[in-house]
Length: 178
Ligand SMILES: [Zn+2]
Image 1 (cartoon, protein in one colour):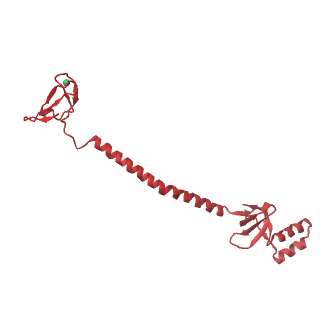
Image 2 (image 1 turned 90 degrees about the vertical axis):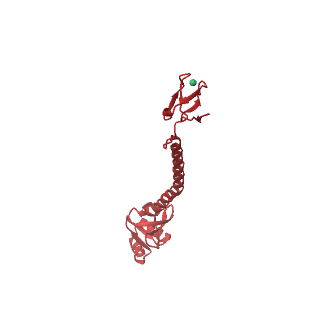
Image 3 (image 1 turned 30 degrees about the vertical axis):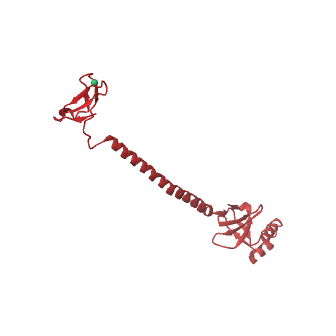
């Protein structure tokens, strides 16, 4: 549709009226050309492409966006499970660290029956029997605030061990905060 003439002018066809239009070389740089026949403007098909081509840039931007999204997706796959890990491990930590503890000074039996006995001594106000159990080490006294690991929670008594100890102890469930 366009061809170069000898004097470096170019001709094209007006898209509006179809008239052949001569584009003089001094108008080659113009963005738009006015048709002398119909007096309407149309885009100059001869305007040299500049180095900054908007179409190219938007394509590059689109490429950047695609790459950015891909990176975000990859990071998401890496980071989200990692965050989950942190969340689960910290909640696991808090489960073991959210330490159970004794809420009130209490007797703790080395067996459930020893604990039951001591409670019965208290009901019977039999301090001598209770002291004997203490002397024999069948029961000990746990101070309020003692950190314990809870092994079993029973209706009346719970099996715990003092943190850092493997000795199993039975304490009144009502005095264990777990
Ligand atoms: Zn025209």
